[in-house]
Length: 229
Image (cartoon, rainbow, N blue to C red; front, side, top):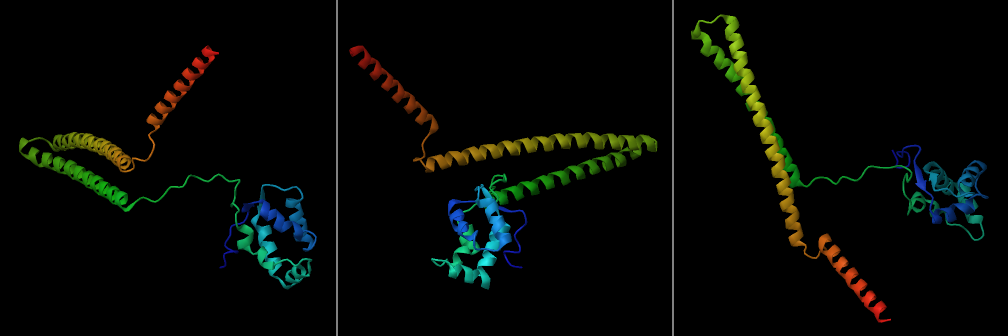
């Protein structure tokens, strides 16, 4: 499939000044349908023009009839000026749409640390589940010599498992909070390290203090000059 056919429909392109100057001479020389479409967007220039119209112009300029018409103009018009590369140069695709901010891919170190945290979390959850099951089973086996009825033994095992489950949940929450706080500290340390490695970057606090100092000095000079006059 060609790149022209793979473009989604209803895609617009920003109508730049150089694009208007390229398309304006085509209105009187192209076929009626294409001329009407061009006139619709060029008679009163808008901010956008459909990609399909530019594609039709490019195809028309490469057709034998279009090439002959362009060569017959005075002066002759170069058909290569209407290739899609030339038409789309310097334009913006779908300027009327609001796209989300660009999210750069994570670095390998960050991906490795994230996978490591995920493995630790999975291991912690599995250990917690095994602890709950093991404590319940141990309570069931340990209550065998108490001469309790089966119902009481089941309730006792469930109670022990429930207590262990609550404790494991609390420990997991504490571990998660400690992990998140350590990540914040690590980010803060990395930011401080970057600042120390790039001392040429201006400090916003220092810049504001210097600006306030200069403004105060300028005000005092103006007051002295006014009193002298």
